[in-house]
Length: 249
Image (cartoon, rainbow, N blue to C red):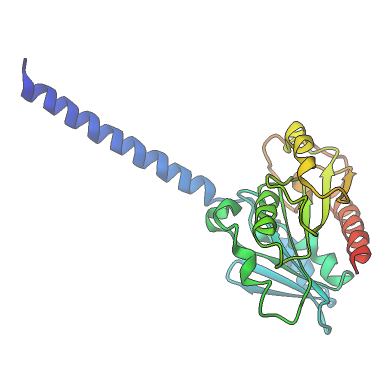
């Protein structure tokens, strides 16, 4: 047996496998590093609204009612591979009419699974004593994990096209879960199965929007058209959230 020959082949195979692993890893980093963004005009439109103050902390967005102190706050986790700017227009009305400070944090690698504890940066050390944590899709799942792990830090959970994968039935959290009738991204069976993890008094609503209309972005693979404009979708979404928030006061 030519031992040297087999050693050379083994070395070449090892080098080839390392090269493949590097290429796959690089492709993965590029994939998660190219998130869905909202249209350029969407943030500008909110900035032009005199009733809402928009500020940035890096790539994190903070929306607040202009000229008054917000009475409550919401830390909203973006969906997987979705940039915070894709939620600014969808959530701006909550700051405008809902008297709410809304924080949309940038997640590591654009995946909330790597930033589950991000809300802790915002829910303490502020004059606001009532905070909610929520999110869209994967972001909602991670927000629910945060609420389960930090039951005294937040008053409730807001889920957009999402579900909990942790049992929060034993908490005092108020919960709002909104799904879209045209959403073909959210797995319906998983969502239905996970409803039992929510408190029995959770508010569950369905409106006629698709998955990406919970934000303000396009190109979501597997999504279906809703037949509604994004403006109309956001109006319906805002109405449900504002009604729920008023009931919590």
